[in-house]
Image (tube, rainbow, N blue to C red; front, side, top):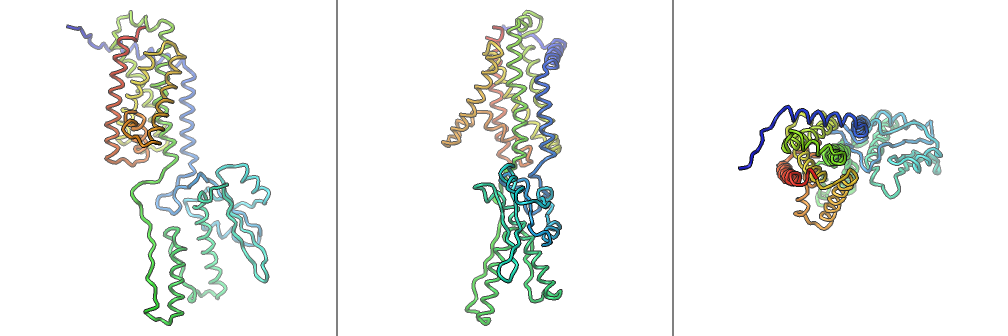
Length: 414
């Protein structure tokens, strides 16, 4: 009968303290963790896609985070009228400061993520014409759709007010401006104008009336892609991978090179206690760093059980992977290359499976489930499907930890 020693807390505590002192001395790892935290703070503070809920415009598209409004005629007065009509969703993204055409050209060719709307007023016969020129990034006219819809609506409202003033303050002869519900108002207004013209020209003949057109827009149930939530999820996944799949193999192989691992094998600590110490330290460090990053981006996510379960599931899987790499590698260089080869191999596998629509093979990788459930937790959009992905992540994590423990038992000291 095999003797299984009982776990001794004082030995595990000494091993955990040893791991802590080694990481405190590892300034590179601390610097990278601080850099990730600073990046999360900057992502949360300078968020170009954050918009008020329920406001038309929502998330900006195409990565266009600044729009410059330029009026060539300073006396035109449109700049001040437009300033009062900027919706809350676009405040901070629209710049109404005067700019010369030369500065605009340099801006468009030198600064990605910007567009420009130029109000060019000029003479055309006996009438003044205001040309609205919308300058967008090359080949991306749809990227400025949010700003284009706003400027068209705002100018229509301004002209409605100007028309009322020229009529002596009475707009009884003017049809009411359609309500601001979405960006389809102009299309609806076009059909309504045609309907009114038909009714006027047909003399109210009921046989000449057209069928009424109603244009509606509804959600199909999927939320739009939030790039900031996607970046935050990537940072959380990287924090777990960094602690469990990079630091663990690198420092474990350092112990093997320096003979520290062999000294631990000759100490009273059992292999199970050594494994438990590593299993406790690295996932906890990774989960703590990931929780800090997620809390900076969205503090409310820390109050959800699903988020913590997702972190534990991902950390267990990465821990098993990192322990397997650290056991098979002999040197720190080998551990680093092993971690990078695994990362590139899994990325290539997921890409090929996605390109050729091979879902079952991709589901064997923990990376096909983990980022999905973490993104759902960060974005507060957890559904029943995500719980199944969470169970799959726990299952794959258990498999990796079993493989790591079995390999470490036979090759860990070599």
